[in-house]
Length: 280
Ligand code: FES
Image (tube, rainbow, N blue to C red):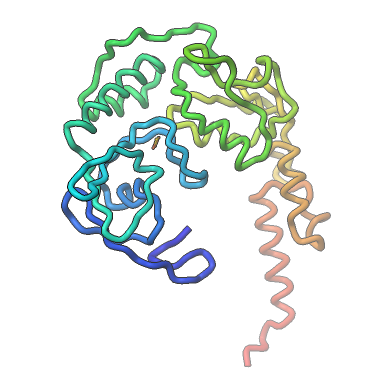
């Protein structure tokens, strides 16, 4: 990740100039085009773009046209990389046509998604000619567009692999294997956070997190010894703790992040106060 041409390692990134809709823009070489466009407030609809995951190009909504030697070629802007001299247009009649058909398809695929309805309406699409897929048993509330972000976050970020695509073609859904509660789920909620249509639901009930969309998988929560609140799934709290400075481990083991932060700050202040008054 880079900010202002400096990578997270501190090394300078090569800057390039590209043209978007006839205007020049600067970016880091190799930066994801969609990220640059959004930063520059150029509207491009998108559903499956998540900067913390590798580009994937599943939803096809973010199409743009790259101009090469006078010819135009459509491509997904979330997989396109910034390069010197790159010329891109974001709103041709072909793009609009492609986008509108996709909006109609998504309105049919996820008829209960207010996010999709609002996004499509912003681009002038309020109806669909396709048959709406309403399923009263759908654990994702008829809001899922199968972008796959939840599956990828679960696999690629958390390494849990608790959910996946089930069935094929028009019957494809996302859920746990055999639609049964799974022990592989940490209850971290990454799937809830990345879902672009708010389809994935979870709820904390007393000492348990219920992953409502994932076959009501139940995950025990950890209790803070200091403030007495449940604050995180137990398995995650233990895994996180294992990565914290060993000398602090025991004392903060049973505290929530807020109380832990206060305790660490106090320890640091007390440790620093040994030198208090020694300011030169
Ligand atoms: Fe680019 Fe989905 S955001 S294909």
